[in-house]
Image (cartoon, rainbow, N blue to C red; front, top):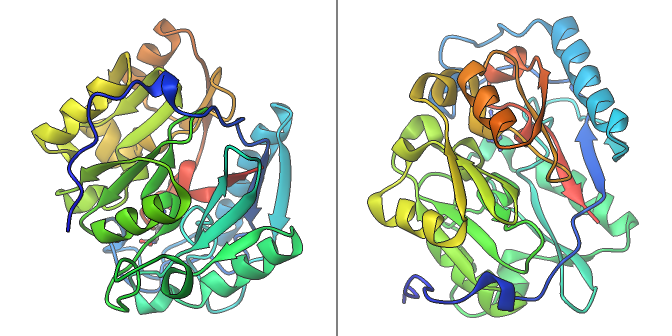
Length: 302
Ligand code: ARG
């Protein structure tokens, strides 16, 4: 049964959660476009300039370091060209009581299934609690092998609160969110994705801080847009061109002050500056060939 959209609750009544301080990045050593599982990958098979990709990845890593974020690096594995997109294999969480854990994803495409085990090992070493969809997410919810969940590609924390935004329709099944909410005790605000170019929630919603989000409205249904406006005081909108071609909404603010974003999102940058953010432009065009940019290339954890 689908839970109704939670409405009428005040975000300020939800438990505060500290912003994550560390960022995980996976080396692009084996990154390439080897198959097509999203529309952006079409025409790019074998087309990645590996040296350029490496330089872009290093520059992104350095951008985080320059902001004082602790960057932890995981080695990419051979045969897993999409493993570099480390936002997708897990959802790290921190409960109001301070317990830290991760929910492991069940990747939608078979080509990506094996990536998850690498991240499970990483978080075991971090002494995080590991939750499996099958065993730990209760009831029928999350236990059907046909259902997929792609971690922080589709599950985004509302900055500073125990509240999750959940995208579904392409890579993640909506029922998974009901299971997560039940197991971990946070509300989920579900958003239906209907444009294949915006196949992950992180391609069209970027929560910048507790009161501000950057979105591409064309990726959502009317209901979803209303939900976003009901829970963020300020909603900035990226243009279609910058959102679709340059992944403007796949930007990331690690601290609610700086926004790291693909170079050339001129109109979005302008809006961000006007809203008081400091824009940091990076080049991720080798990764755009695979349908990913800044947000997908890192995973924030505590
Ligand atoms: N090629 C990858 C895929 O289609 C890109 C993933 C990008 N990640 C993201 N969080 N949007 O799965």
